[in-house]
Image 1 (tube, rainbow, N blue to C red):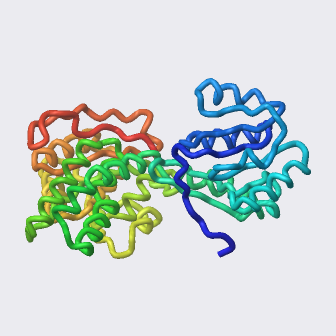
Image 2 (image 1 turned 120 degrees about the vertical axis):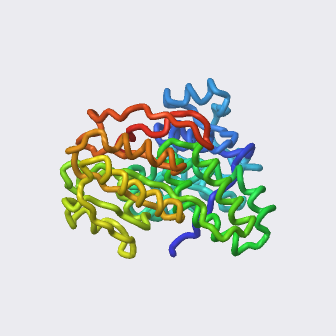
Length: 360
């Protein structure tokens, strides 16, 4: 490891940006978003600074840099057009034990600014130690696509429950296992599906079960995933996550191995004939409900549309059984799929139960 990765709390602390370039605007913006007071030392400024000054995030010092600007600073970033000034900033910062970054001059830096994936309060930082900044940006772009914005909401939900979980589960090992189940299971999927209220209720039920040492498992959930033409390359990212987290995969016999191989190896795979009538559909629904009540995460892979209304009927039947369920259409069908606005009265009140979820 070439550098020690850390996250600094800069709320209310003074930071210094030397230089008025476009790169300096980007760095000042990041510091301001982190809650820092930003002092910009530059004779000339890029127009991009205007909004920062208007918001009161930055203070402009229209004067040449001097070491006194760094007194009390938590860190300094330099991008002056004069390389000699940048070197002076680096030397002064090191002499005063102030962390310093000089843009595009890794040899003058005591820290580097990583590429950031911001899912506050979840933060992912990627650094190459200044060796290949463009590579860091490429990796960030890939992670941006893999990490839905809702992960921030999941972390916020966990933060809201932490005091209660700590009181009701005093044993550290039990708490750790509880949070593992939360983040790897149905609560997380409900948050990612935009169903925060369902996620909160499910988390509360799980906590009640564990705290009471109830031998029964908290209810699982059923995720109906339409796979369209069966091309694994067309599956949305959320479908991949669901398959990799599923305990049970119930699939039409026509679903190919290319899709089934995306599920985790120890998941139970149950092939069924496409239910074309009410009796066959009822049998499938009973099986799905049984697994969900046993606390299993169930994915129902739907490969066809010979019975166009069966998903709506399935959702209604599972809702009546008190099972949490959602529907994820295929990429090919997401724009045209119409799912009835199904409402049910149960433990969760009367509300829309399922709706088409666009590709993640």
